[in-house]
Image (cartoon, rainbow, N blue to C red):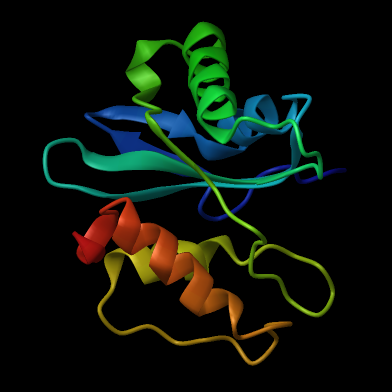
Length: 144
């Protein structure tokens, strides 16, 4: 038996139950994406909306804006417009535990919660300020 889902795997976007794992699989299949995380953040209109954070493979010739556009088109083509996947941002790195698991719940809480707990298992706490800066620049969640 294999469990392929996560607790935060299903988000509710305007009454549609969508799988963030499915979106994440599409995003990670892009040739320039090294790793990614897709999770739901609060949306006043739709309840939740998907947000993608990607770490790009190292290359000097990568145009981040073009990659974002391609990823959004890929998700729209595979899942449809109902996914409302419009926000994908390039980050230097993702917060992980010492064992290498991406802290998606922490990413969601940084966006949605004014106060959140930082897990003691986080590998590098300085990543949090990097993620907050990306959220503030792009007006994500409470950082509008």
